Length: 631
Image 1 (cartoon, rainbow, N blue to C red):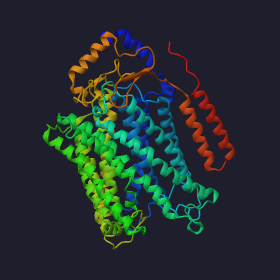
Image 2 (tube, one colour):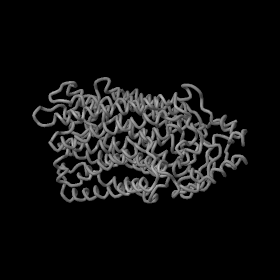
Image 3 (cartoon, rainbow, N blue to C red):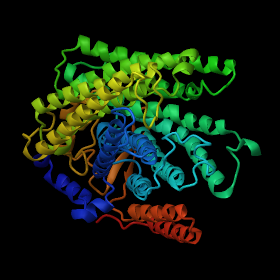
Image 4 (cartoon, rainbow, N blue to C red):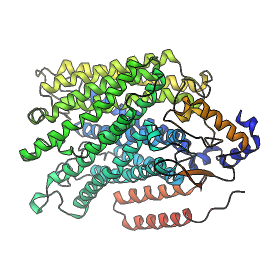
């Protein structure tokens, strides 16, 4: 209808916003949708690698005295599994893939606030992942656990390059994460559609705002820790050496100052996805909308005050332990608010249990299970007894996998029609959920029991006669069942991409703004900048008709260039029109130079690092040179 009403304006938008074709177009793109897809494909590759590592771990532990992996290989695989799943899959697929693709569409923008910075974030992320896996391929993978505790990670006890690949790789990765977080914050505050005041912003956007704020404040602690470690290892500093005035607990304090907020960084996008899917399939607005929005912000704020929750067995004073135990109990409150809202919305609505909603129900179940086992660790004596046992592994994986990854899989099904224009197979989708749900429960629930029986974390093998064998066998069987369910998910989506039925623009009757445009969306997202009067604009049919009328009159079209509107922070009143950059080779050029600098740094080739720095400076000069005006 839009093309018929105002074909000249739409055709001009198509010409102005058209991306380059072919591989070169993908390498130089600044389109948030293409960048989101690049993140998605890269994260799925890393997810597959992390999954293979998990199966290797479970296969090694399937029976006592097994030797499928050598001790050195097991330590590297175990460490890279954790690093991959956290830094190369869950965080980047949440923010980079889902956030990049969907957030501008949800808030009525045509792109992210800084498109070239957005592209740079992806290429740095990809480079950091390749960098760390290069270490594993060379036999120098990180081997001290994803938390990399000193003194195990110090040069005295770990003289190889594996820890250097870890430290430099995560510093490298943190540049990408921080840049992306800043981009999301500015986009959410300044590029919302006219009328989308803060109280009308989707809960999905609140979740990503909370995640981005957490990343900006949490990443410096981790980066500082990693820099200190590299200075200790490379130049003989003594930040973590007690005999020279250092403190090994400094590593833990700085790491967990990042590490506990990181749990909420991982889980909050899941909350945002849940609050998008539940209203759609229950046909009602989210119960307690303002409280849920506030809870998404509060869970991050309180999360910064509970890092010692991970250090109850390190000998800190009782006063400190009591304070952080109380804070660990407080963080349950905003999570409980959200669980109440999800369940009440499901009960009071008319739920239709299609595949996306099934994944969200599974998420709620596992989040409650993981939350209940987690709150037990707020009791200091309980924590001290079960620290570094498989009980912790069970809790952690119910949260990180069951509660964080399940909504991502539900989101893949939910927005698959929007991204591809095709429907997935519903029957296979439901089957994939039940297989993955069963696999998750069978894999991780027995870990609670074997942890209570004293099985330690990160153990390479174990003797017979301890009563652990049956539980480990069950967990390994569950891991392979889970893997089968995940393979079925992606097989369903891949086949549906080519053979699925046409989806239409809004096949589920979704409530948020991304469903108002075509499937897949055009390069410019919206022919006319939408106007918003509620948090569920697709259910305000009169507003969508007014948008169509505005397009027919040529209002809010912005077809004079590569333009998107900026709005005021609080009320989203129309502020100014921004001229956005288009395709650019400079982000990938900068990322390549930065990747080369880290590669030379691992080998100590400082002159080559200086050359790479000069190349990056030259790229920045070209980056900020004046662009030609649109014709």
